[in-house]
Image 1 (cartoon, helix red, strand yellow):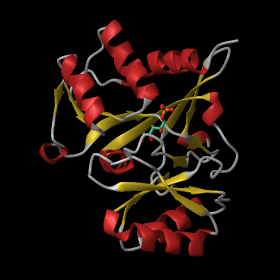
Image 2: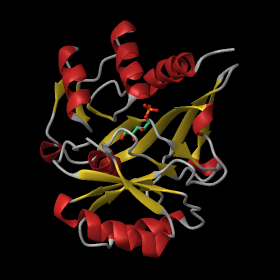
Image 3: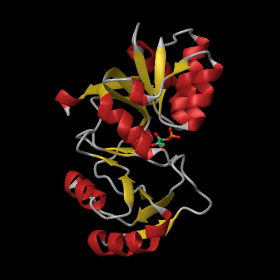
Image 4: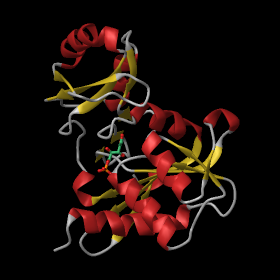
Amino acid sequence: MKSQDELKVLVAREALRFVPKSGVLGVGSGSTVVKFIEQMQENKVLPEAAVSSSNKTTQLLTELGVKVLDPNEVTDYEVYIDGADEVDPKFRLIKGGGACLTREKILTSMAAKFVCIVDQSKMVQELGKFPLPVEVIPMAREKVARVLKEITGGRPVLREGCVTDNQCEILDVHDLRIQDPAALESAINNIPGVVTVGLFARRGADVVLYATEHEVKEIKASQA
Ligand code: 5RP
């Protein structure tokens, strides 16, 4: 039986074929993406340039000699590759377990194609078992927590010791049943003090690669 780490390596290797031969690659964050960057190095499949969703990813790419651009210097680009905490059958996602959700959402919105790379444990029928991350402006934390409780019925918990790359905080909302992810995404985004909610429903993935014990499966949004 393969470990979760081994499955992450398999899916990371498979994702190499989505690295564009020229132009900019968007690179996400998290342990699966770290393995993807390692695979890029091992197989010498490096993009011409990249945009990055976290300081850690920027550091790893820079160490490989990949030029990391400020997204302000880039118009829309071809492919964004990133992991997720949950993926539902319609390719809607929960992201933000690594606290990089805001930059991930910005880069997702600029990409023509979002390739999501996960192991099979992330595939779910309904989003919400994984606590939903919400990045908040620190001075609004308590107020946002009260509103989140009211509109979701969930239980927001401050992620202790976590300061995001944007100097903000994360509330993880536990005990949710997310029946309409797009509506919830909009409702939470509308709370003053919320920077970003880790629901990627209005703009989900276009391609999902997920590693199982036997193979890496690819599904496209048109098949969802
Ligand atoms: C970071 C993310 C990650 O993509 C998500 O948490 C999955 O991480 P991992 O690959 O470590 O399981 O959204 O903000």
